[in-house]
Image (tube, rainbow, N blue to C red; front, side, top):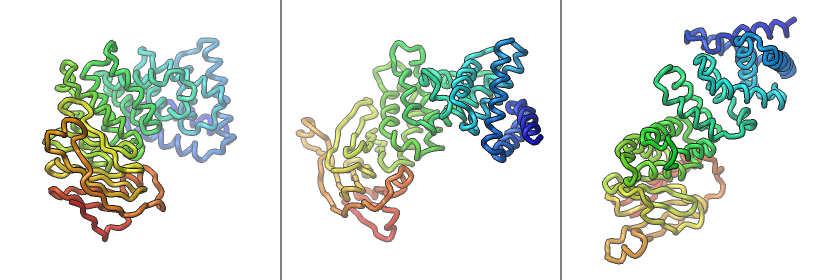
Length: 378
């Protein structure tokens, strides 16, 4: 009796998942999630089995399209909120049906629902999608549509969710923007991609921290002065992304007057010249991963610190003629602070653990576990 009631309540509320009235949609979602969480796994699996049979029947006899869409919606909600309740076969079926609705331009309402469910259950559905990059590309295009605005907004939110769940795959999908023959290689697409990545970074900095080098590459490639109109269109969104990276990540530093952007990649430091969008120089001096870097206010010095090798290194810019033959920075001073092996090197810890603060032409090393101990290098 209770199982039947749960089935009826769930099915009824699912109809209002994408209601145009926000308060109705929000209320139905809250109740659906609450009801789902209160049920035992076997009850949810039984519900999924019933609706899977209903979906298969609806496809065979070509019932009313509303019945078919409702079946996909119910199973999509179940798979997104409680992935274990779907069998492997049902997960494949639902993933394919959601994709069908995603590419169906006849009903914006059901398409919006498909976009949202694709984002919410991406970890579940992506296992059964042959070309994930193509799906992310499609969502990116939908986030650019003018009408309906709700479709663009939902696609943007789905991209953010997907980006947080699998940042590397998400960023890799944007490679289509850099193919010269691609119709999406227009500067406007690049600019919108940078804005999307910036939104993702603001919301999930820890998830994107392992991909910081890829983020910098996105900025550099979007500022290429050799591609017509690219730099002019992208400079604002690229600037916002650089500012956010510098604010959040201790392994990124930017000197605005010289347009030099530095990023730590494992145990080396790469400095880019954003005026020419090229790699300017590479600094090698640490044995282990660099965890914090910073330009001095004047841009003629750079400091770097590694937790594992315990080295705080000061680099100074070479001003003689011989700088044209190699790196433009050279190691000036090294302070051995001792190795720090007792810490858990999670992205969240690494973001918050150490910072190098420029004070004119010197630097102060701030360590979260030793705030009363100030170390200065100049």
